[in-house]
Image (cartoon, rainbow, N blue to C red; front, side):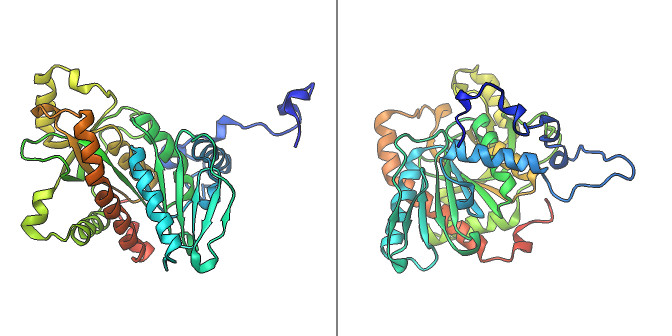
Length: 347
């Protein structure tokens, strides 16, 4: 390679520099108006936009974009990643029939015991901002999981760049605040609509644009909950509610004036609140990538049940495993469907 620091001239004098003029999202946003007679776009993104995002993915996730799979799970807690990594290594050791290798940040690869079980590379010494882990299967039919951290800005950043890979589906699998008194810690929330107060996509996708629930993804999530929890009918309804998820951009929303908060949330019929789900769903709609949300209630601030260290520790130990298995099962259900069915006509 070239030692850029040792050069006497700027790199842009030697190489083509990125042109932000053709690295925007006008095509995906539906705002591009070609000149009469001019060529029309053949893809959702320009080549420079794709190249830019591939470089960003490497930077943010510490894995090569070639390892990314067509079914992506986003989470907002490292606890889920730890469990995903543990399960993946068990799959490799036991010779799981559906997955060939497991890739961790730093491009460390653990091969399935069916293929010799060789481990190539070493884990990165420092985790990146959004570490990604990949259960690799043939034809990209495996599962990628990314810890995007907390907040709509991170959620938009991750989905902006993953979108250029054109995955078949992505899910948000994380924690939320339960807003209804009838909910219990550990209950599931299946997002059916979104109250968008994240603000990071307002310029790209106006608030007047509805974000519909996608039947194919919703059904897959419900089937996964039934299979993993072993509950059906009314018993399943006791641990899962379907409804509106409110997404905000203020982590300390609990400190807002309670009357105003309760009124807004009540008007929207919201049953859960987080900082990522609406952003991920909205970007899925914008980029025409099937999306879904399955959250787990970790606290109920409006009802006096705050997230305290002791409660959180016990909660994480008992719920993360089942929640993650539901997300993985939902993706496995989706991948068995024809692509033309997964990619809903609503998109």
